[in-house]
Length: 406
Image (cartoon, rainbow, N blue to C red; front, side):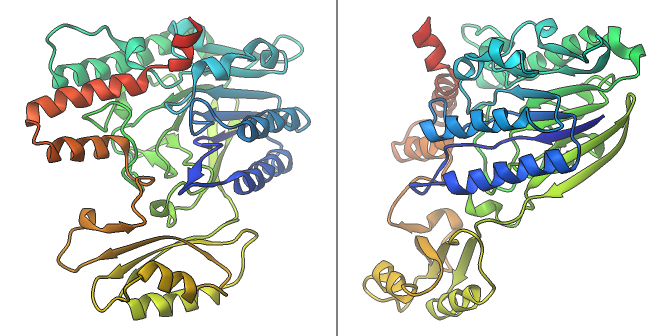
C-alpha cells in the first residue's frame, strides 16, 4: 500500500490582506497529479484544512472539488482530521455522505474506539487501520479544576494526550496480527519538533505537548500536523510532520514544501519519500541599508519568473531614509515583476521585536504574543498574565459554531 501524508493546507488564508486562491489551486492540482502518477492508495490530511472555522466560499469549493476529483484517481481511501484552525461541526457536516465515498472525516475528539477506522476492500478484507485522532481540545482531555494553576493545567493536558493515545493504541491491538499498516494521526506539538516560525501555540504556556515515547509502539506510522516544517521527530523516522502545503508566512520561505509518500509491504514501512512542491509564488525577504535593499530588489527580478507574481517584504536600516520610505520604495519597484507588500525599518541597536511596521499591521504576529505585549504595556502582574493567557486559550479553543448549533 502507498500512503500520501499531507497537512496544514490553510485554505482561505489571507496573507497581508491578499487571498491565496490561485496559489492553493495550483498546489491542489499538483497534489492530485502526484496521487495519480504515484498510484497512491490512501491520502491522510492531518488537520488545518482551512485557515479559519468559517472559511470563505471559494475555500470550501476548493476542498469539495478536490475530494470529488480525488475519487477519480487511484486513491481508494482518504482520512481527514480536524486541526485547531478547523471547525469540527463544519468538517463533519457531510460526514455520512463522504464515508460512502471512502472519505473518512474526524473533526472533533471523541471516545478513542470511535476514532479507529478499519479500511476494508470490496471483498471485506482489512487493508489498513487508522487511529484518526484530530486536534484534541481541552474539553476532550480534562475537566477544569477550581483553583488549579497554569502549570497544573498544562501537566493535565499532557497527561490527557498521553492517555488518549494509549487508549486508542489498545483499540487497534486486535489488528496487530493481520500484517496490515496500522497508522495514527495527530495535530499537536511533539517534543523535538523544529518550527520555522513562532507558530500559534495550541496549548498556551507550553509548546511541547507530547513526547515521542508517548505514541504506542503498535503504530507503524504517525502522521502529524500543526508544525509547518517537514521533518521526522525525535529521530523516529516513522513519526513525522509533512509540513504545510505552501509557505504560509515569510519566515517559511527557506523551508521545502511538499508531501510524504509512504510505501508499505504488509505491515512494514519500507520507505518514506519526500515529494517537493514546485514554487508557484516566491515569497522573498530582503534586509539591509536602503542601497543594499535596492540592489537586492534588482537582483531578485533577474532570477526568472514564476507562475504567480512574487510577494516581497523589505526591512530597511533606519538611517538617511527618505521622508516617505513606503512611497519611495513602491515607486522604485513600479516596473519590476513583483509586488512589495510589507515594508519595515530597523536600527542596528533595536531588537527584532522593536522593528517598526509600515503600514502597521498584526498579520504575522501570533495572537498570544499580541495579548502578552498588551498586558505588559498595561502593567499587569506576571501571575495575572498567566491566568489571563489561560482564559484566552480556552476561549480560542472553544468551538463557537458547535456551541451555536447546540
